[in-house]
Image 1 (tube, rainbow, N blue to C red):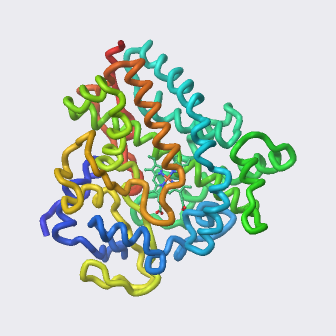
Image 2 (cartoon, rainbow, N blue to C red; image 1 turned 135 degrees about the horizontal axis):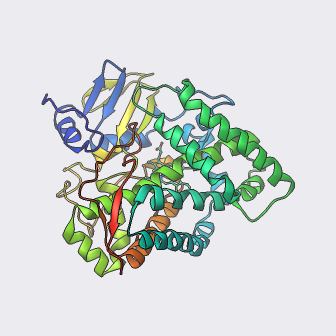
Length: 386
Ligand code: HEM
């Protein structure tokens, strides 16, 4: 095997070697299977009879995510998903558009005034946090706490780290305590927000339990913030490195939705997802055994030359673009419509207000830690103004 290791800033050469030489690879040191090809990654993500989202999870009151929808399999997953679908409706997402635009404009105006900024700190980071806080009906003054908890939790998801570690649980416990109180208050005094709708939602005469609701709130913060931040940041990074595609996007903003689909493929904000094998399964000529953990590399699948022509080029009008950046199968991202809406408005507003936003030439980019979320800690940029 060629001696290429995974560079967290640019893991794509490693994926390429692995796809061609070890598409289904057992890492003996950490006891984990790694899966790299498009078809195999789709299978691992969607075949819950072989690759479970719940097996191997720690379910306890100090780990609400471990008990939340993303950590369940059908039939429990089917039940939870239909309950949350009742409250998290396309209409509720669409109704957020004017608020998202107002928040984005406010943030962008500040950037234009200053002529430069850290895009993560000043734009792509705060926007999703403010939106999710408004969606859940959380007071504005608590947003900073949120951001810190979700960042701390994400930075704990490094390779080989298990779910019993202190680092993984502390922010979850803090979030759980916080949301318990919010839920208690909303039970007595419902508002026009997602938590109040979730408290009311009912399927087959059953409602979400208090603990399920808590797990879902914590999951939304974690699944929705950092990911959307990185979609926006990765878009500016990809555009800055592709002069011609940037010029076309600025000239014709109707290209933005397609451009964002290509960012989702080319620089997927979620690079990998875990499953646990629950019955011996053949994949890529190897036998994965019951009980073995499996890491499905979404970021690699989205660069697979068998599926995507010119897979290593950033082409904003790629069609078709069957990327799996939002997953595949029953766990397909619940927040995909919101993420797409937020990122579209974020890019439209940035280009409209700030013109061409470029990564500073001398910027030293530092990757986020962990194997799941892909992006940079800071992105120093300059703006051209209008
Ligand atoms: C660009 C942004 C985003 C990306 C790339 C992304 C990616 C993903 C992926 C890959 C999954 C599948 C997980 C699996 O198969 O185990 C997922 C599930 C999920 N996402 Fe997202 N996500 C994004 C934004 C959001 C947002 C904004 C929200 C909510 C506000 C959200 C909420 C969820 C939830 C609740 C699930 C679990 C669904 C289930 O288990 O049925 N995501 N996401």
